[in-house]
Each structure stands twice: as C-alpha cells, then as structure tokens.
Length: 176
Image 1 (cartoon, rainbow, N blue to C red):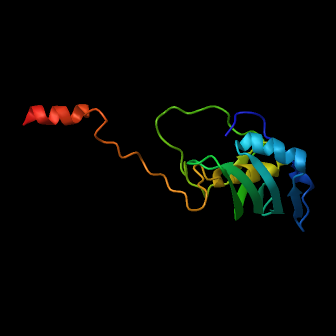
Image 2: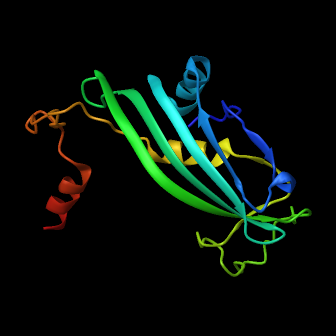
Image 3: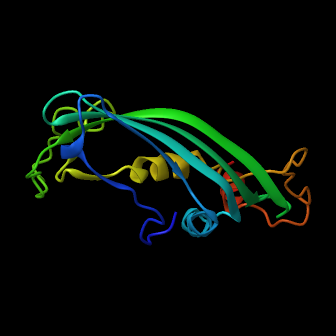
C-alpha cells in the first residue's frame, strides 16, 4: 500500500461517548472512493461502507466493533483483465486511552509482556480517534495481492531445454 496520507478520516472525540455508545455508518462517495483506490493501488473501489459501533468498557477503555462491505476492481495477475471482488468482514478492536504513551523504544532485547499478541488493547494517546483508520487497515489486508480472473491459471513456460543448466546442477555433477 502507499505511504501517502489516508484517503479518509472520520474523527470522533471519545470523551463525548455516552453510556449508550455510538453508532455510525461510513459510506464513501465517488471522490473518496477514487482516492481510496489510489491509496490501495487497485483499479477502482465501486463500494465502501463500514458500520462502526463504539462503547465504553471503563473510564479509559473502549470497544470498537465494525462491519465492512466493499467492492473493488483489480487487474488480473495473469491476463491484466479487470477482476471484480467483494470484501465482507466483521472485526473488533479494544482501545485503551493512555494520555502519555511512552514514545521511546526499549532496545534491551526483551519483549514486553503481550508483545505481538493481538488480544492486547490498542493504546491511543488522544481522545480524538479516527473511526475510519481500522476500516482502512482491514480493507488493505483483505485485498487479494494476486487476483485472477475466473478460470485463469498461471502456467509456467515448459521450455526447459532452452534454459541454461543450473549452477547447482553443475556442482552436483562435479561432486560425483
């Protein structure tokens, strides 16, 4: 994916979250979908809709639940023809508001408890949270890196006679 700024943002102040929680739908218009397609390096994003639900689990912890629906068009990895695909997924995130997250890196060689564990809450340092961020992350991870048109298979060339002999095969002959 690209290193540019995210194509969409939907900031929400977690301090405003009531006990009833908050629900919203993030649906992109044509211009935002075009920016998202460039960001995700796909031919087109025909549909992108996320339903996000937030609820407070404690004074500094929040539960983020989302359902993502998207339709994209990519170039076939074999024929370069357009390939349409759909993404439909549910996911959750646990958020932990820590106003002063430690920004230094500890190079002592030991991993902190829970390092690499997906069940550890995501630490955030600001109550203004981008609700679209997790949707973009999951969308980017769900894109097939090598899409294929229906019925298309990659067949490597079978001209083994024309290929030069492998250096390892030559070494194997010398060993015998």
